[in-house]
Image (cartoon, rainbow, N blue to C red; front, side):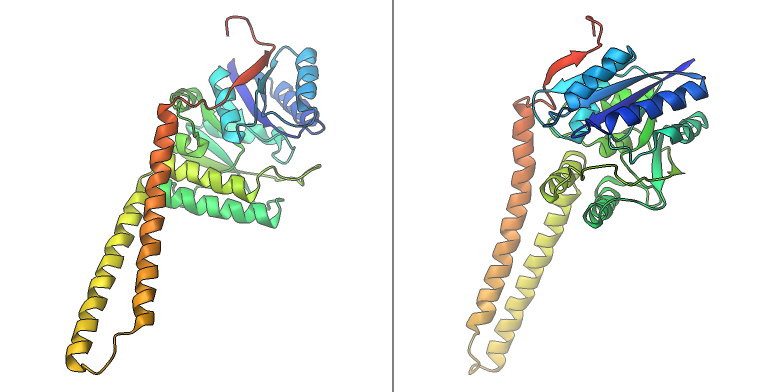
Length: 312
């Protein structure tokens, strides 16, 4: 029998997590053709999510818990679960019940067809307007910066084969971005349509600041296109400045009485100064992340592992 490992990042889910786990167990038991285990990664949740994880681990030895020492973010939690998983297939999903665990067979069937990775696609998303806007921005970023196929929809509910996971966990730098790691490993990716449920309680943990940080992780860790765009913008600005200078000289020669405009000069200085600062900031972002990575800043720090064998 093939084995399926489920990886669930957990944050503020003390009430929703038992339902998600029960749904996984019910569905996998009904399929009957897979072994499975579940990895619950507590991203230093401020509520009693860790207590819920410990109770679930006591009830079932196939459930394993990982507790972070501080909040490292969803993608770091995914990386921790991926590293400890050993299934032939690995399924990642959310802890809030919005991603339907009882439709996991759709993702697994696509993997059986020969695809290396499968992402759930939602026809009607139940996220807030802000979260949907963030998803659209993330969609455009991954397509432009990471080379994601235009027709591929990416989400937090996905399944991958073991060799993809093995390649993903080779990434040990400080800023993991799971979508970029999947796209780096394979382009043989499919979508399946699943339902998207209303959130049972609470709200998304992704603030605007966290979404911007996530996008920066994506394109600074896996793409140099921003630097190339900055170079192109610098070249265009320099050309515009050169042409404007020629225009000013010609205008002065043709009509010496026309004064050189102070406002236009200041506008040009402000524009080009802003462009230079923007490009320097972008370069500094890359250099800063390189510096942090060279200092071996960890993706995560584990305080406690639950239901793990001693040798793991």
